[in-house]
Amino acid sequence: MKILYFIPLMFLAACSTAPKLTLRPQQTPSAAVASDVRYPEVVRAYHVGRYADPNDDLVMHEQHVIYRVEENDRWNLHPGPADRVQFNPPCNSAFSPTPVNDAVLAEVNAQRLATVQMMAQARTLSSALAQFQAALQQTRISLQETAVLRAAVIQMKKRLDALEAAQAQPSLLSPPNFPTNEPPDSLSP
Image (tube, rainbow, N blue to C red; front, side, top):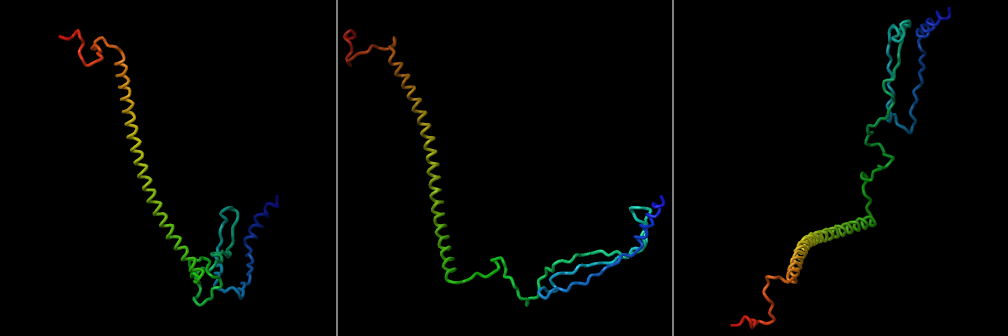
């Protein structure tokens, strides 16, 4: 039971001792890397007075210094002086001048000629496509007209068949059939 009384005292003793700050010597940059390539980290010291621990009412902290890293070390992305030699050429070919020699000029001219030929073929193809679409539209119109005419012919054929069927049946009201143009003798005066 007496051990429990010593536990808060140990916490107070731990808080009251100042932490030993070990300072590492700053490393000097190597000869190959300039000192303006990276920014150093920023460390600030804050002096804190006595205060009660917000997590435990039974613990009080004595005044001490808190060190906080405000900014980590980071790369310096600003461009360097203009007289600095650039060791690596730019990777993007858009920023490098085009090499000029006879082989490159011949290839560029061949590509230009191929482009002109492709454009001419594309124009020819588009005009042929326009003609094909006009012919297709005319064919559709002709097909519709043919369908209308076919329906009219079928209707006429039905009427003709009906008339032939009506003629084939002898009618009581129909006049007699004479083989010649002369009137029959019984009807003569």
